[in-house]
Amino acid sequence: MTNLEIELKALMLASLDGNSASHRVLLDQLSRRLRAYYKAKLGAVGRGVAEAEDLVQEAIFAIHLKRHTYDPKEPLTPWIHAIARYKLIDFLRRNHASRAEVPIDEADEVMAHDDSADAESTHDARRLVERLPKGMQCAIEAVKLDGLSVAEAARRCGLSESGVKVNIHRGIKALAALVARDTRT
Amino acid sequence: MKTDDLVALLSTNVEPVDRNAVVRTLSVAIAGATVAALGIAFAGLGFRPDSTTTRALIYLAIKLAFAIGVVGLAMIYLMRLARPGGERMISPLFVAAPFLAVVVLAAISLWSAPPAHWGRMIVGDDWLECLLSIPIIAIVPFAVSIWAVRKAAPTNLVRAGAFAGLVAGGVSAMSYALHCTDDSLPFIALWYGGTIVLCTLAGAALGPRLLRW
Image (cartoon, rainbow over all chains, first blue to last red; front, side, top):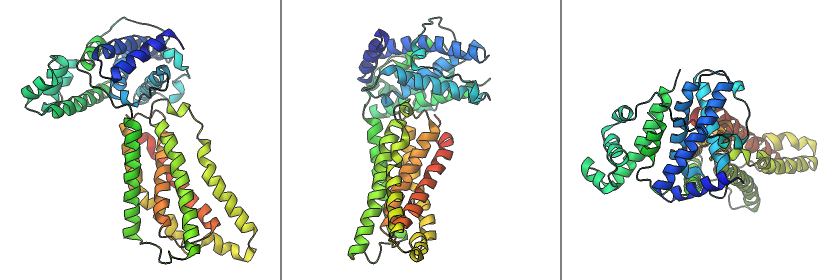
């Protein structure tokens, strides 16, 4: 097991317990690895690296939304790799590429390189949030963009605290769907 | 949008996550699906009328053991397949064990019976009812297990769909067994085994469309 695996798994376990700081470091680290991975993969099938950042963000959404499917008894790298590869194949299929174009790769590849060149994707966060239904929009803006507590957000949006949580969860899912739908060439 | 901004967005006020969510959702879903299938079979077909005879009870037990074996093994796989990369960890061949067992038992029972009885042992009284009932009863359990798998994150959609179909077929066979009066091992092997395989194939075909995320 590599040091990176041990370090990232520890971050993952902390983030599953609700540690926001660990979650942030984890997603930041993973996005750098995913960027290098997607640039290499898209380059290898003759596609522009411009789409790589959209894919990075789709994968980050997926990792965030599906983190409950990580089994702490297993190493983290294969789990990340399976999601990254699934999103790659899904992206290529959406864009009418054949599956044969996706080269077989090893799980370690997804962690192999670090690319911190933080590029812009084609999506605009605030604009995407504005396309959400009102309850989700208010809850996400309050808690995720303005950093209010759930209780404060509940007061601002006129929702119950559990209503805020449900709206944030659904809203992030809806955002991920918007990003995926936009990512077509 | 910069990826940094997305990361910041997703990691503000992170909620703790239930680590057993996948296993629990699937278990509750299949338990619910079993109750639903039993209800549908009971309301639509009724319990077998001769259920007090020893022979009826023995064959009911064999059918239930086969169906429960199928569901139990398929559930273990489905719980893995519901997680990203789960398809890598196991070879799905073990799940053939209950089918092999019932086929071997059917062959032994045919071998020990006079050939004149073979036709009746294989076709039974109501092969058509069995052929139709198991896939029809399986629709509700299939929908429920697909719903549960969608809550997770399968990355091999054909295989996850196939195992959702297998679980649904097994649950359906379990409930149909309470009604079915065709008591012979070749009948169970062909019509129970066959219809469950049919459900599995249907699940494999529908998986990529239903499970995409």
